[in-house]
Image 1 (cartoon, rainbow, N blue to C red):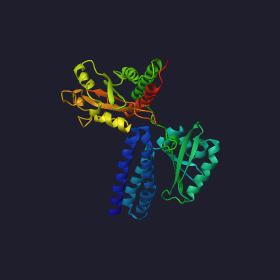
Image 2 (cartoon, rainbow, N blue to C red):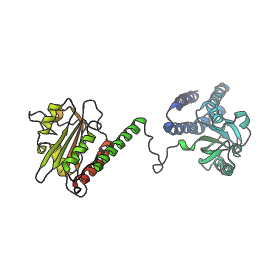
Image 3 (cartoon, rainbow, N blue to C red):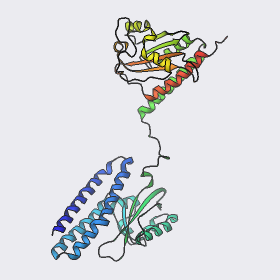
Image 4 (cartoon, rainbow, N blue to C red):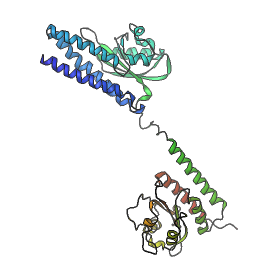
Length: 377
């Protein structure tokens, strides 16, 4: 009886895991392959462990145990029917012996009609010979197989069929357990993996970036070139408000940087005066961008003095309530840095993203070309 109790505990654990698999049918489509793999593993566990264990108990146990085992066998049959994966039990000639509920829904064939008929009869003609050959190999004990087939009712939809051997109790010949699944539900290989489908929010932000790039290009092409300060002033007008709360432009001269443009929110006039009066050489971020030619994208800057202090000695990032900033050098590669453009976002406004930084980097090159172009006559 100890072995019977142990078998009962193992079977109870199996029933619990199957219940969890049934509950997992509601997971997103991308996660279904993992659930399917777990279901196949559980079916393999039944075929390789529980079923032989049951045969051993039924052949050696007393009649009372045999009665309990018959009940367990009925439970296993019920589990086969209820497992949330399309499964068919066929012989080596692919004749259907059992078809569970999920398989009837998947194939569109009633279990009563399918039983006693070859499963290949429900496949496309081109797949029947290959399926029969693989099923025979599995039944001969040559290992599990997997192949792609097509149902006759839906020939355009590829179906992945996984075949594994099963030895039913009291039968001299090996049967074949067939698990069916849509081929396109499997995790794609990295070479063919499609990119994530953008959400409506992402699409809207991308469209807004494209509009900004278009507005910047229009402003640069429609105005005079060769005047660095004028080019930066037009660019700052495009960026102010729609892209950044603050726009600060510094032009690189022969000896040092000079601040040419400061655009701020309408309620920050006093703060804007302090920024305009500041020496760019006192702004560590600006100096680093002009020296190294690399973009800085700090979110919630930890150093309050990263953009220096105003004439009153207060950190500019604190007075402007800056939560995110972009500090972009204006240069073409190769070539010297012609200026630095700094953008602030403040308050509850969303921080600059990597996509926005990339778009700003592209616009900075266009700005640099317009600044270095010879003046039109």
